[in-house]
Length: 451
Image (cartoon, rainbow, N blue to C red; front, side, top):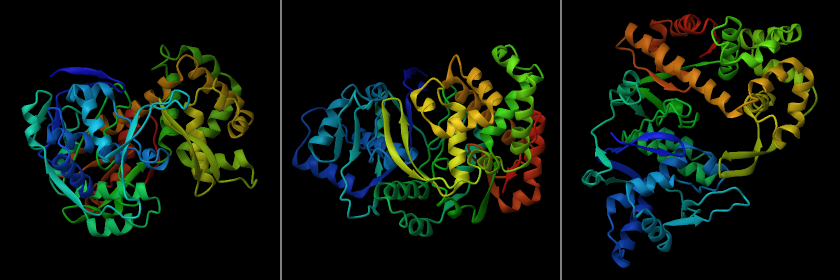
């Protein structure tokens, strides 16, 4: 199978498609009316047009930033679009000329790529959807029609198969919950996600050139909607690694100490063996492995001071970055965001140098902070990729595969750092302790697991 290089790494082609896709009814009606009243003047493939519109819909569902920050505007990879059709630009011009999509022009000053969004009537919720048959795309060379995904390309057959063997969503109750969301665009994405799950319209991606995580309709489903998931009528339960990214940071440090990874991280050894670092690390490690890390570190950072939970932050990546106002539920949630930013931000950047919260961390933990700076010195982006790859390998390639071998009848689903199964299997296998023991064996560090 041919591969093309995109902005997100190497992706396999041709594109695998199933027979039907679900789209908002008003979008389908708009396109059909446009074709009838203003026929395209180029070689137009209806199914390809619907496929392009579906890319907009699913991309918004996959990344909530498009709704929360970018007002529903979505940027698409031009190399992939060109691979689907060398005429792709004509399709998008047709969409904008006929009031189906709105285009936001590339802005170098705002560091923003060309992007598109559906033109909604913002006073009316989109509750009706249509299943569109796109099977004739298989006649084009860059599309492959499949009945269902196997998970072989993602090396996750042991997880993908369960989607087709009994995964369900209580769509009526999920819709009622989704309608409580005040943000109109976000609400529309929730409703679309519910519809696609109801219709068993699944997708699976895993890219070793980026985070190596398994992305599915579940990984991007709002936490508010997960309680309405079930497997053959039985409720699903979720077990996740507490403080997952800090936990894998401990795993990395312990590996360096035990000389498993010293060649890769030769530059940080002097920091790790200093008495100041050992003292700070011992405290941080204990919080991560035995306490609530984010709660404990928030006590140190804020020392009981009353702080604002509303912040102005940058969202997005690459050519799509904009400021947004975020209000956190509590100090713990704010601290979690600050720590993850600290772990992965470029310490030479303006944002780092002018962030008062991060300065407090530097003051409270000078040795650990110096270690982080040294770790990111040559390439700060590499560290986040490494940690995500460690997490993905542990959960997808080690723990869930071992669980599947031990209990081949136990349904398994993952949401990045968490594992889902039914209440019956979680209790029968004492799954929490089993996951802990497996991760201790793999990583030599025992994590905390949240139910």
